[in-house]
Length: 258
Image 1 (cartoon, rainbow, N blue to C red):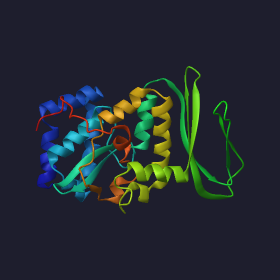
Image 2: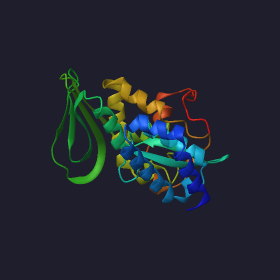
Image 3: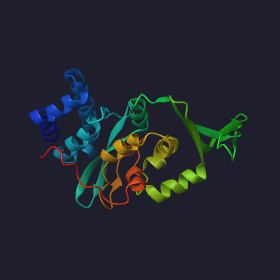
């Protein structure tokens, strides 16, 4: 075990950190599973290991606060290493599946879904009701747009559609790392697009608390920083805060002091 890994393990065993994990997960078993998934993530990526151990643990606690395991396989939350002028900095990013989990936990949603619209399928929208219908069958599996749908248990439902061109324009406007070869927009475009339409519909028509949770647990990327590992950043997103926060948020006052 390297010195870096040992330091992270030591920080995670601190009483105050253990208390935070217990408050989040409610039992020792789930807290230990969270630690295991975190350590596996760190062990499997040398670039994350270049980040300061205290920064890694702080970002991990942001995911733990809402019971989202940090795992590339699960797709709920990720640690993305950024290379800035001050060295490598980790950032916790909520994944596509993590966003769905946050919404489902409110127990207010009957249906949450996002999907790809392919060449050959036609999208029709009623200008009066806003209802969107998808007609036809794919003639080829080339994405031309993305659709998201939510239905609340009280009966309210909404569907939104964005063309691929609209998604690209959105990404160029809000993603600092869009042009980076390691950007998830380059390595996992469909996943990023699906999260974009899902986040848009939730923030516009869904429960505002879901987007508030994301904003509370995602920090701004270091200035002039870029993601540096395509495998780690796959299925993640870097523009959430740029879109929803025009000014830098103050740091949480309850953050663990290292």
